[in-house]
Length: 534
Ligand SMILES: [Fe+2]
Image 1 (tube, rainbow, N blue to C red):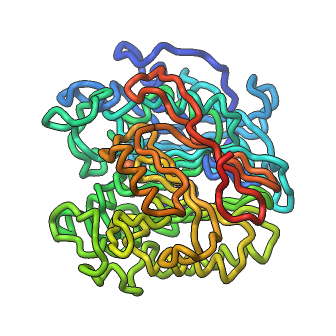
Image 2: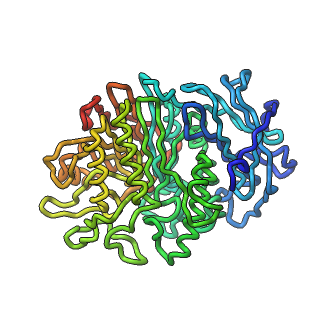
Image 3: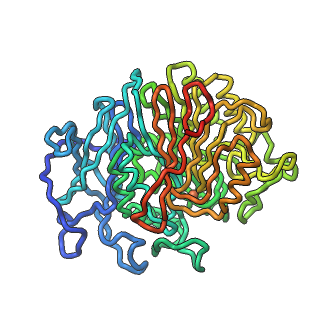
């Protein structure tokens, strides 16, 4: 699949009309094929990616499973416009692109040649239908030092466990971008027995295994109005975790036979590409022909002038399997390394050799250049959590605690390069953790060389009671905050002198119109590693 097949640019002009929602009694050109909304992502200093995906008929998952499907033609032509103003008086780019059945009728438009550090407005059109107007922006020029940027980071939005009220509140945060750290979808069917959590809503989809299953899952999630609004507000930088494929998978290892798992992984990866505003280079560097088990290259760097650089890692696709993982069953989350020497094996990696090298090179580049804040953005909690009092040890096998040698190599890279400011961001555990990142977690006296904010979930539940989270914080003095009882997102405000993280938590995840409040705020001063409570 070549880039030129994905993008075909031409000019077009279109009159905006508004149409009623989908109805059988109309022709294709009269129907609104945009119930999944629009998105933008991967902002560079001269462009970004625009995304939409066409769908006809009721969105699967929102209707009974036996509802007949409507198939779209193999190729549909979609028009798009980018303007400097929201009334589209000053259109700077316009064109048309093909929505292909082979890519789930998704459209990815890669735009370049725009001015740095600017907001733009965009919309898509098909037939008489026009999407709502959305906003996106370019990053500042490479040599600029912006005096401020604000972004939110979020993860983990299991449909049935909560509404996405957090996204509505993000609209009031004056954000330049959203960083999404994984578990955009969950692959599960609805629970068969009444679950331990309060069901916020239901869907009618089976456990996702095939490409069509995963396409349906993304379509369901994208029907959420609050999620759509957050995508319309600013560009997103997005990575995955395990649930875009299968719970707790590691590299080529899932549960079930390996070949069946690889088919499932390929399906999940292709659907992720189709449904996210990713650049086509993720495909051409990864999947050699759709469906081949070559993966999808989603680790990447994103600069915001000289103020900060995101090093977005992929801790799922290339990791070694979890230490002492029983075959064909759930992994043991708490492992004593003395009973599991495999955990300490220096050959094991969370990133794979190529990505480890790439990450170290990037941190060294930051240190050698004028980058003020180096952001290691990845899926899960980075800092050590010993579940038992020293000298006893017990660690989660699927976070960085399960890969201590790999974590130490990354820490050594930060220390050896003398990176000016390093901030680790993560998700996965559905809890807020704020930590001082020590140069050597095996020595509690070692100095902090960075800061970590592991964010709670947008909607996904945790079974960890707050009493236990606080016990873990008390056992690990580098942990400054541990909260398992709140859902929400975090906002980082970054200036050349100071980084401020505000933990925003919603009142009630089962209420779509939930209110929000601030749980805590932490500040990092330039060249002073470690967060301070504000
Ligand atoms: Fe999750």
